[in-house]
Length: 181
Image (tube, rainbow, N blue to C red; front, side, top):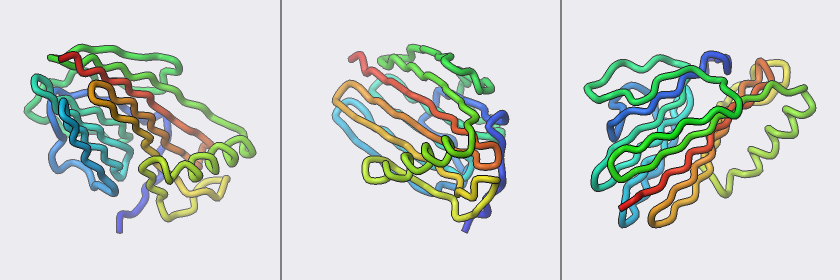
């Protein structure tokens, strides 16, 4: 079993690589592979956050949000930046893929954090969820990572949520992908 290491939302980094994976760098806790006619999408919850990999006829992209540094791999790094950047977004086009990501972070009061945390837990049936089996922080809630996704033949929507009980913080990303072929 993976031992949870307390992390801070201010340590988050976002990476977008021109690669279909980040080999062997993270412990995968949950994963799902979706194959549609125009693309393959791999969703992974890792010990330090999430990895989303997309492969199309002319593009390979991997998004990673993590508090841990990634080792350099033999692939171009398109984006490497820290967050939180509330309301900030980035848009990039690679091959036949138009890729947009929006970022949001919030530090909440304990009651609001408790309510939001419970709403995320209640979303488990419609998403991938990993709740770390450890009580940390003043809220007495377990940290969790949740990935909600919707896939259509030429469009993907992914919403991720990451909780930080020590600071009553929640970080979320909204990734919108269009396959232009």
